[in-house]
Image (cartoon, rainbow, N blue to C red):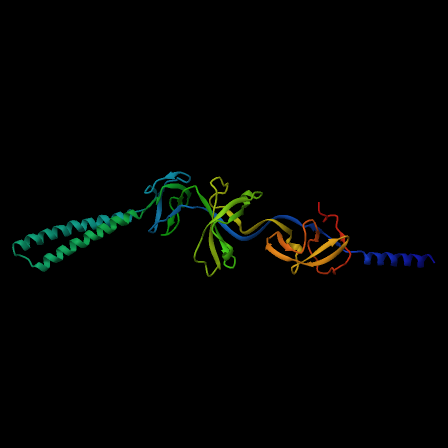
Length: 331
């Protein structure tokens, strides 16, 4: 008899547990600012800057060690080993002396009628040719000097004495410390929503707990067909804590609306909400406005102050009883 009663009790408890309403978390519909954003990543650069690179292959024999210092346009930043080029120039000047003497000799002979005009013209041509070679080699000697292309601060200095460098190797980055901007890449499907003047909210690992301001300043007219991105430049205020070279994540605000009715983005499924009232859910079709990453604007179909399931679950039927999780109760 006792076993039978126990079995009935256990069966009843199991049935009660099975029929117990499912537990959900809810969020309160509220009013706030709805924002549609375009995501981008990039890095901080000066708006005005330049690179200094060698024009010839050579070994560094001197460098200014002037990183962080002010320089003027034309200042010598580094020198490459030019001994071979100087030797070539000296050889050309020796040839010039010989050809000058030959030209003078042919000129005197021609005046006395003791040579031909062809011999005189050849001597003249040889002298002109060596003059051109000397001018070119003299110019080439300047290629062994790395000079500042503009007034500014040496933002970065690379290369050490003794290093062999190739033409085009960036040895110096020189620019103005202010203003700065973020050069970011935006996916081509998002670029129609980006306009000059839109504000941007920036995050960087260096300032993990801060949202920093910026505004769209330039949009490149031509995109990258391989990466399928467009380059966007986001201007920074002069007091920004961001520094040149820092990586940045940018949320460009493409649309914004004040005093909008908002629900969490995970509460919306198929343009519907699960509205909770007196322990029961009602599935409502709603009209969606701005879709943000965290919140979605509801144009019609729900009022601020109502409770909605967040996240929404598709396995709860319309009109079903539910329990609100204590952890998920709104404040």
